[in-house]
Amino acid sequence: MRIILVRHGHPDYANDCLTPLGKVHAAAAAQRLKDEGIQKIFSSTCGRAMETAQHTADLLGLTVEGMDCFREINWGSADGDPIALNG
Image 1 (cartoon, rainbow, N blue to C red):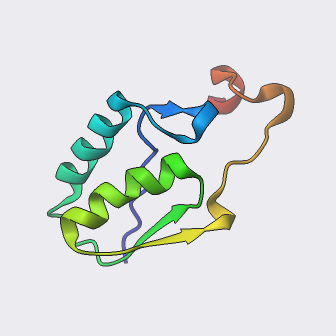
Image 2: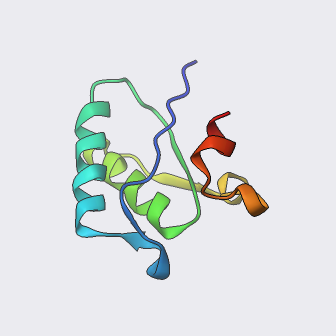
């Protein structure tokens, strides 16, 4: 079994969805993944992640299974700090 992780496309955090650029990102990710033999798609239940995953699901004729446990974690004062998150 292989697990492929994909980050959501460019987000509109205020509305929990993808921006027009994010939709381009999601479509590009779907095209990149179409020949990888994907059989199941799981996603965080946040809108931007579900929308990103749906692009691949639509291309492959699959459904997206939303998983609350995949939702983001609040990192406190380190949230958004690239040095803190990447070591």
